[in-house]
Length: 446
Ligand code: ASP
Ligand code: MG
Image (cartoon, rainbow, N blue to C red; front, side, top):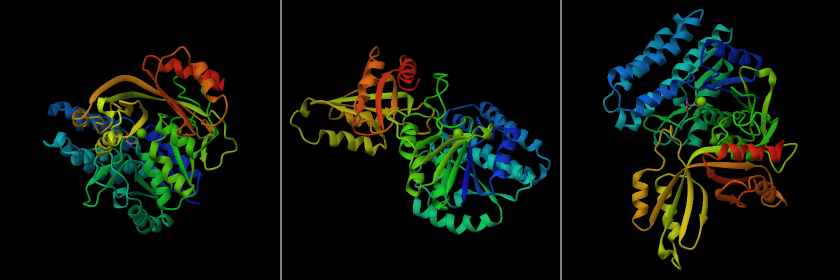
């Protein structure tokens, strides 16, 4: 009945927050693996260092901010001696990478730098657990989390991970709780890689899969998954349960509580996933399971900001074969993932996710140049994607009319409906998206 517990950045932001997490670990004897994110703010600071040209003073100021966060936790420990050398060692290696002159041009160095956030927080959290009377040790996830070498967005190698986890991690679980890092891994050459922003949830699910865990808990700063982002409307309600498919759709289309890839391992191994708040564990949370008690037509509304719409157009498309294939081959070669697609006789439009703080530049100049060689390319931004998530939406009567009636006052730039039973998506101007979500929430849930 193994449980893997993951604590997000705000849950390990400082000593008091870590103490709440320690109580949660103590309360469940099945929790033998703990995955942590970097302390809140640390990865953002590391991304700044890795991606912006800065003077030595500016870089040092950022490093000082990180040191302050981590030393404040260290000094709150009863026995800081135990980890202080290791902490200093990690901060020294962080400094060295931060000031490396090739940092801005070397994705491998960027990932090595980014990995320090999770390495620091996991070291400190293992000390907090020990102080709470648990036998705990800090485990370097890079020993088992094998990935490809796509720095910034590395893909896990499942069979290698499983084998290594069974060999190197499982036997240790009888002795102590292992506190390990989310978000990071290593490639076949032993170079450090990262899984993409927010990747710690994904790590937790991958480890749960590799270790045949029964459950995976994601502890964050909200009491579960809501019908929509409570910051958009206070009428949003927490959901007691969700199916794997619904949760995957919600995460893909912008629900911030879970990394989009998290549900894949859970689905493959039928691992129950829990989402709750480490500050208020008594309030319960959302259980994500294979078979839900109910399958409502509407479960939730999500929003994803900063979408780019690309339209490629060629007069040759009429009666021409292979145009779409050519376009999508280029897109795939540049590792872009397309969300909405519409086609007409001579053009195709698609949307791409283009988050401003992603480690990888998603849509780059080369992609556009390559497409421009055989068609006209038009790019439009300032769009948000609003998605209604539910069940049997493609076949239930009245679903689309209810949705369209609610938002008839807004201009929908693109609509995606019918291909997937679990969602209906619209591209709307970013100035409208808050209102669209509010109006839809009212019509569907209030
Ligand atoms: N620390 C990483 C990030 O901020 C991974 C995570 O928090 O899940 O993106
Ligand atoms: Mg996080």
